[in-house]
Amino acid sequence: MTSRDLAMGVIVLLLTIFGMLGNFSFFYHYIFLSFTGCRLRSIDLIIKHLIVANSLILLCKGIPQSMAAFGLKYLFNDFICKVVFYLHRLGRGVSIGTTCLLSIFQAIMVSPRNARWAELKLKASKYIGFSLFLCWIVYMLVNIIFVMYMTGSQSTKNTTNKKNFGYCTSVRHDKISDSLYAVLLSVPDALCLGLMLWANGSMVYILYRHKQRVQYIHRKNVSPRSSPESRATHTILVLVSTFVTFYTLSCIFHVCIILLNNPSWWLVNTSALINSCFPALSPFILMFRDPSVFRLHSVK
Image (cartoon, rainbow, N blue to C red):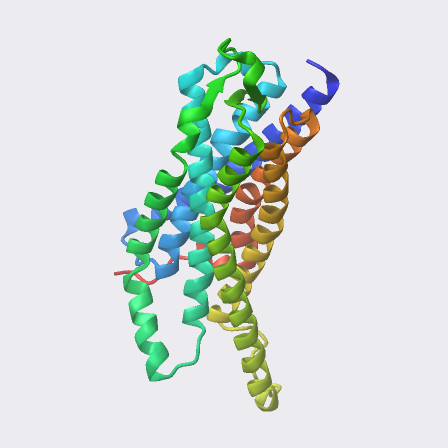
């Protein structure tokens, strides 16, 4: 184990522990609300699924990558490698889908209060559960391909035709197959990213129009605090902006890994580090940007 492996292992492990503490804080919060009989907001259901997806990413990417850096990569046999990689990709996909759903739902909630949007708001709340279920199913099916081609690092089968990912390896294909494979995995992600950008743009426009509309009625006795709805919108804007930044970087590194026959140590480990950043930071963004997340809601 070299000094660079040790340094990378420590960094990824600390980031994973940091992120899991934040996500487990949310688990405890929602368990407490369930036992006390409190009524959750519609948006809380999406956040709960986002927490589960982020936890999957941290557990199935951060911990194995740290173990590989510490020289424990040969503990992963073919079965464990397939399961870990599949759950990581599933968590990553659902994290993208739920973040997209979060921004779309909030864009609908802050939309103008006319009859057409009122009906859409009611329907949006009703279909959140179905949308989350569909998100899990889609990414379960799309990522089955990982189960087929991943093997453990200790496997001696066709070692000359393998691509090393640190703690696991995959079968190497020709450039055309790898390119088609990258496009197939990117289509659902690109759709979610486009919807996120549209929803974020809509929220920014709505908030800007609202600010212009109320500027002339500001008085000294008006509280400077923004409304809960406005604070929630700002929180989601920060959350999605953070997600888009790390996701774009992650995509660039991921495409490079797929297209290169032998990805370098730096490329593989930097990609793992970037993949863990959003799942680790997102719970703290929600805590600090929207303190109402940890306030008790109205009792049933």
